Length: 208
Image (tube, rainbow, N blue to C red; front, side):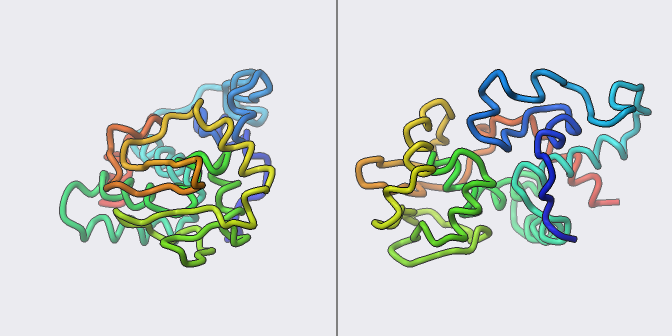
């Protein structure tokens, strides 16, 4: 299945919460979710049948859409999380948070994860001094993510860093705007995920 290229505001409305997929627009009055906070389509405002499976499926779809991961890749992340020590759900979110495109976004170098993915693919960043253009690259504690010298005049990166203070930066990441670098200080902290995610529903879905 190809990556979704349609209007992303529909995804927020489908999941019933802001997923912050369009960067600065999500904080403005133009946000479609604020104007129409109900599912898209002609039956969007109709009554939906409640079920445990529906809740589990919607939670999985929501997390996939937040991080821009397709089904096969998401299942592989879950299998890795299930094999690792600790709580499976928290392991899953930690793996997703450690993706390079997510780290670039969380550091404030991009206004959305979609933009971060594109910037990474276009070779604007290095990790520990080496070029990395794979959005799913998993960073580790101690890694240093930097904007390349030639990329420090890219308008989208400059604008994102200027507006980055409106988004909370997690404690496991440290940003040095003067040097255009971000450091991974430790492992992702579950309590610092600001979006409403119930990872236990995903574990229940895949455990059937």
